[in-house]
Length: 211
Figure 1 (tube, one colour):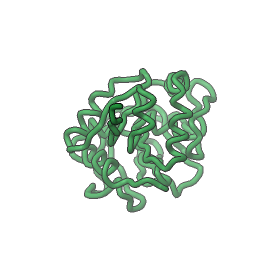
Figure 2 (cartoon, rainbow, N blue to C red; figure 1 turned 30 degrees about the vertical axis):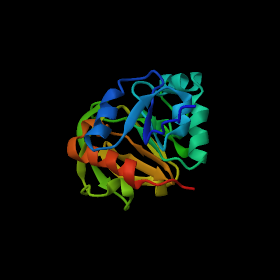
Figure 3 (cartoon, rainbow, N blue to C red; figure 1 turned 60 degrees about the vertical axis):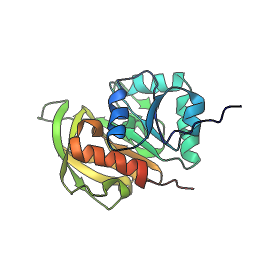
């Protein structure tokens, strides 16, 4: 019988987006990561990354179709660290108002809302993250560092204690969140140069299981 290989970081492949750039970003900082759609591997991995691009509803539908929504909930309940990226962060919350009310994973209380004001939507480009509290995700990352964003919707958390970082774009919104072993970033760390790579390394090495 062949021994199972346990991946340090598994990037959940549920048919949405190009995930290889995230995998390469982890490799660039010396962290073992694999893009995987294999349920067995996802259940064995030490950490999970939930990416997401496009519409919230389509991402949730694709995740649920493969049964990975329940897998994510179960692994989080086991204490496994989870990082949601971009729409993947939005999916951690209760619901989104994108194209009508759509339910999320419900791991965090709150909803996802559309930017509504005079600035261009979507927000595309570099913006700063204002750190609200110390956390392993921010190790060796300066306050007000720039990260790369592409999004039309933002997370409105019910509990402000989960908001680690805020960004200004028409309003101040949650751009980095964490509660126990559940983490999320609204920006694309794999496109955010030194600070983004450092954050991925911090997740892989500094965020510990909650059990």
